[in-house]
Length: 592
Image (cartoon, rainbow, N blue to C red; front, top):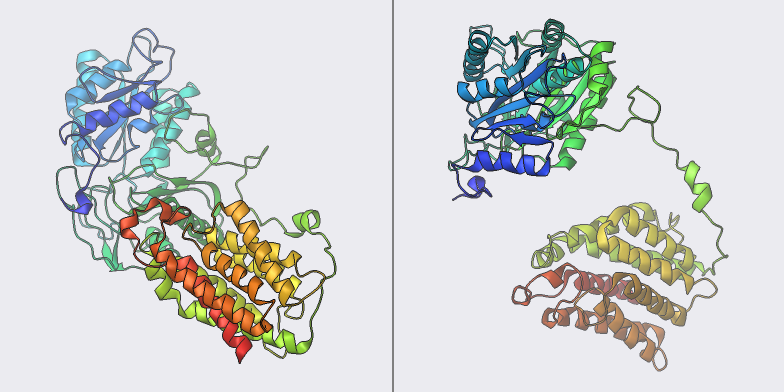
């Protein structure tokens, strides 16, 4: 079985039923009809319904989770009917769902479906049977808001996509308000006509037990794809998130397309960014940022925004963007309370109903609280400062050059980014270093320089390496406050090591960057009493390099490598090798 077809299921035949069983197990306010794929709220039934409110029923093929059953709950749907994967549910299940939410005295049942032939036929057939055989008052709203189609030729019509969820929410709120079936239908149809959705896919999906539904190259993406893998309107090369969002919204609002959604300056909209299944939250938030910024640049008021996984196509990597024109009624309905498990609840500022993209909090507001004036640091002469400049420059250049080598070592035990992390930090220092005649970093004040390097490690390196180097340089700066000498530098190294051990948890011998630092510290401390400062440092560097290479034979007992089998660790630790690289660079700069 190919990687694209892997599924954590028990059997293909039971995957839909077990999916629904899992949903109600997590949400015991929902229940399944015996022997059927129908999810119903536990607060409805023959003895409960009849309070004069309209019941709402939706459904469709499975594989789109959390739709449709995830939107069953107070304030939204009363029940949902599931079909097999990507297949409309059978009429007998739909009719059973209608019976389950109907009772004498109820205000009727509204069926909300997406514009697919199977759904229209099966839900329509069930609606007619419910009217004639059960005497139930039933209406149906068909949602088709897809903006992908460009041809005016006769087709099956616009597909129903993520915008259907807006209709679920609006109708649920109106039902809770006690509106009649006719009133709800009128508002729902009006809302359905004022929204649009456009999708974008990066990968196919695979139905359980089958292969990928289509093929798309690694460097391609498809615009306007349907949620079942139906072909889109065009296939293009992969572009950035910003370009992809512009492509999508431009297509959605292009007046030359027969299915476009008119959007102009001053319009009020709700925007929903939806994950088609395999898109990370990191990517979704970037898409949301780009979409909202683009709309706001065009003068559109984004009064509500939602971002998450709402209606999927199994594991398809891709997104959809839905826009709904708002008025006060629709916004009120979107804001109405619901406990349906899958409906999102964006956080608005306390006491306001207005959504505005927030401005950044000024850093001055917090700097006054955390900035303290430290002791005056010892300084050095221009010749020594020039040497430190050279050391920083060469060390940074060597770490940048070692990026690929360190990444390759890191693939053995981690995620292969140690070199990139070190290079990113080194490049940040090189960028801010300035010129030798007019340096931007405080090279004439080693204590201040150490604090500056600590901040650089935090800001540009990130991750555990950035944190450890920040601790190292912060602790080292304390030893350089009152004096600067070879002994002070050696003490600074010891202080940095002790702080790294205190907070990082590693000890010498654990196969980490601490090993070469500790070996260098010991060798340097001993050599300073009997050698020139430069020769003593040379011995320290040689000790660091030897220790870094010896990590290849050590058992990892700290860091990410400690989770990896010792059989897989054949090479030196990448963090230790990085220490050896910059130590050697410092020695060469001093020697020259």
